[in-house]
Image (cartoon, rainbow, N blue to C red):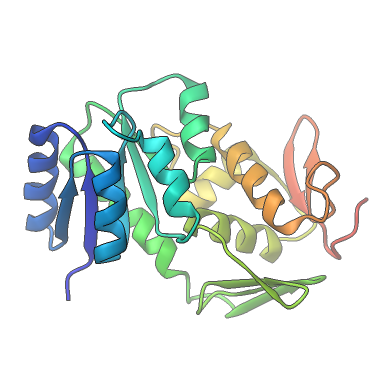
Length: 231
């Protein structure tokens, strides 16, 4: 069965271009032209990914992303003409897993789609589970637990958490984390990692303002505590 993707954009030409290209690549494509319709279609069809334009009538892309994140961790690729770093960070903090700037090539978009879906599917070549302190991650089921309680994470958040846990104690720069998780830094920017770290801390840290698991190494980047205690 084909993987189902919901494409949300108010420009029919953009929707048609994406539909044509991704259907030829083997995906099943559903579309919506505005925010409210996108939410309804998502709840009806339960796609495996959403390609979401920022500027939408009725409810903008950020509001749609926030709504979807209330009940789902489905991968979201934000599609927009906004190029400022602050806009990109705002999109990531709304729950997007990746960000593609208009105008874009259909081939580039397909590559991003496949990369995000691979992350969501998980990496089975390494150890199946990782545990540090009270945090536990099962790579096969894509499940994270803190103190025995399930923690809902997006695909990017889960991969970032597992990568840091697997290398607990090691300090990574933002660039190193981007390269490890995305395989490349093409059209990416290092500060995107800060947004993902911020969201991840909200979900796993007792006090996100005084993190004990994911620690900031000022002037360098981040490291995951080997035992879950502040150093």
